[in-house]
Image (cartoon, rainbow, N blue to C red; front, top):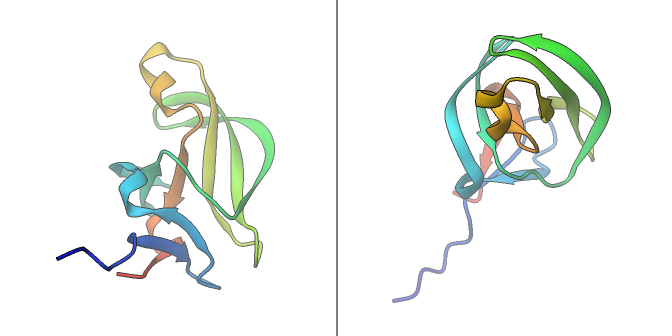
Length: 106
């Protein structure tokens, strides 16, 4: 029998706007300033803010905050550039704080 359920999605915790898909999780082992976070290969329905250099746990990175396109809530950040070779895999990916996203369509 065909699987009739749609993809498992995550939404903004404030407005439930769909922002990412469970299948796009690269890692669940990330740490944000206020707790656990997930690294996603893609995010949708978000606005990427201005780029800035930040010193994170893994070194210097150029990042941009990621906001929900519906309510404007900051959900995490996008890695724009990693300066250390071992961190290059993060470039173009999104870190979303676990407490800022909720399960939708599970």
